[in-house]
Image (tube, rainbow over all chains, first blue to last red; front, side):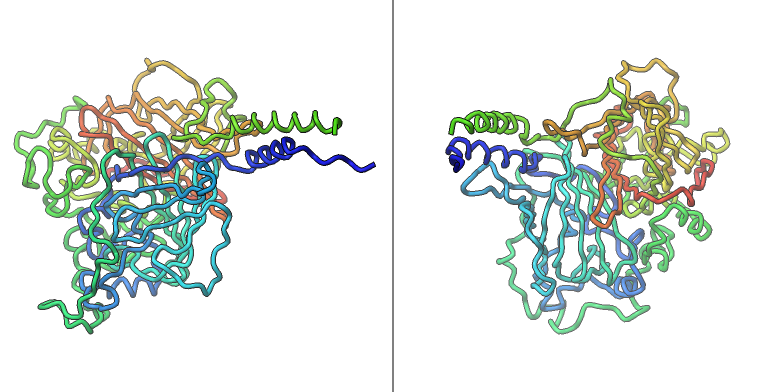
Length: 331
Length: 253
């Protein structure tokens, strides 16, 4: 005897069960998230010239970093409008805006998360529906291709198909073979991003960093320009002829002396390397390091809300305050 | 037709129940597990060996910064005055070498962690740098009356991500620490007071290639020395064994 067909109600119930069982519970990432931590790489125009400390650059990466002059990149016609890469979400001084991209037929189904914030870096779309990445030979973009999977409260994002560019503002390179993992964890009004970069061309080891952002009701960070507003200028009067590459010859980069002069870090150490990331390097390094004498003169007190060199207690100066407290442990 | 009515109704009821529980958890907060066996309830395994990955604030963590170099810490004028007057020689002479290894600063020190269970409700974090020990206790206690200590009193709770009918497979660890002795946030004299309190989120992540990373986000409140909460992140990578474990005494250098 032929079995009777399922009723429409039964089919709907089955569909609902399958949908709710399959749909992962998501954390709401939407909002304007502003940086609430502070590290030296975020000082104005940071990190400092020649500071690649802790970046696991390999030999080629160090060679590229040693000859870079990012301040001159506008001399290259094809780099004048180049946005910062996806790394800049963790390196840049500005915050991030997260907006859900919802299914037009089902507003509660989030297809993707859109990351944006400023126009000097490319917005990122994190696809959630199990999209396969494009083929290896597909065009690479500044934002690359990103897919995300929820692991509890954490969104695990995989990024590929990135263009080559700057790993850091001061000239560490990144290749178009770079891939990245990004973990986004929200706890109340804090969002922690852990970012791990893999680059077989310029890095000898994974490069991991983290930063924490705070949900803000304030309007978003400054929009410098829109990408479409940038028009490259062939000749910048007094600055370039539009044809020369922005690189120093090996051994002739004057900016590499900055870390030695201001932090007593030898240039060869300041150029980075994988061994620097690990605690055992400290013993090796201490043999060649002495604390700079005197009082800090460069980027001494940058902190949230206190950007610049002014220090509390002595506005506008970086000199020690007079009448300092004695060393009694009243704390 | 009649034979299928009851199963269909049951399916619809189950679907409705699932729809209620599988809701987005805005903010991500889960259910505390203060009164259960914390080891059994752990939604994530943090045990094993972890090594600091020093890629941020390298010059402050791998080296002793110059006097006056206070970038990144929202100190107030009182803290600055203290730091400007502080000398390592005086602290060393007074036997205070471990002041930079207290709970408020220890996770920023280049180090290795050995994490294990001391008992069902105490996670033990051994730190080779400075030979320090943190005990993260999964018991809900009132303000401690114990004597302040270098590592203070840490109360831990799991923050699991739970879905109806499923054992929590994801989550993180939240730790609240108080009752700390005064100490140093940096080895150039930046202080924190005995009134400081700290909240940490310990989040472990695994990449597809199997690499495990631990991000410890610390939020330090100090009414004596900070203008606003000081937030910092420390990243650790899991190591397969303790072959590089290297206990070392505290040092102000």
